[in-house]
Picture 1: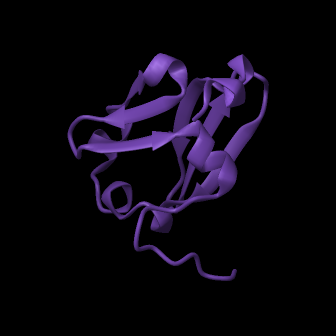
Picture 2: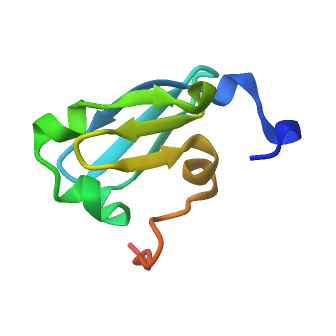
Picture 3: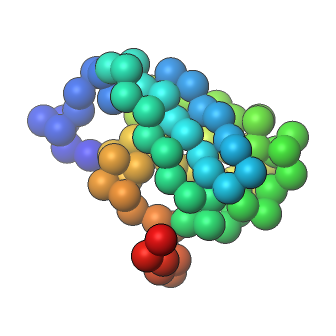
Length: 90
C-alpha cells in the first residue's frame, strides 16, 4: 500500500466469522465480508485459531499467529483472494 493510498478509516476495528465468511469491520463504518474459501488457512483453522488474531501494520493488517496468516484491508477491499485461489461465481 502506498502512503498516498492509506486512509485512516480503513484501519481494522474488529474481525468476525460465520460458518463460511470472514467479516472485517473498519473504523470508517464499513464491513468487508468475503468467503472463507478465499483463504484456505482460515477455512481449515479451528474456531479458536480464527479468534486468535492481532491487528498489525499500523492497523491495516490482520495477523493470525497460530496459522501464520496475514490479510490487509487493501487486499480485502480489492477483493483479492489468497494466491492460487480462484474465486467462484456465486
